[in-house]
Length: 201
Image 1 (tube, helix red, strand yellow):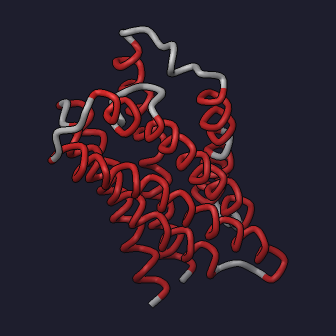
Image 2 (tube, rainbow, N blue to C red):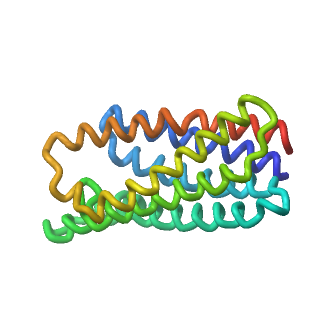
């Protein structure tokens, strides 16, 4: 059962990442929100499967990874579900949109989203600490997970410093490029995770 959950969750996460990347390229924001929810739904069981492989000395890191992944899923789930429902289907005032609409850089929900991804990054960092390396693929997986943890700092510090609140108009394009880079970065993590579960479970 652990093997099936791990492999399937890695596939679901990968589908979410690819779907998100395509949605951003074609300019379908609703698709991006939907696939972001899919990523979070695959990510938690993927992290839990990594943690199920932990040795006794790595259990604390595994538990931390699960906890951080859960916080991530709740925060981004609230943000994107609101975009797909309340924001998309309701006629809100400009004042309400300035707070709730993800498209407003520096809005409350935009900042909540970044905060959520900080927890995702922390989750990958802690689960990366638990990876046992047996070959080059495992070494790459561990490195990618640990390095991904660095994104937590920028996701927390940049909104606090008001970087996005004072962003220029061209920042949207830069934001899309940054998200596409993240998709390119996270895709091999999903593929290597699938192979890791297939081999070790």
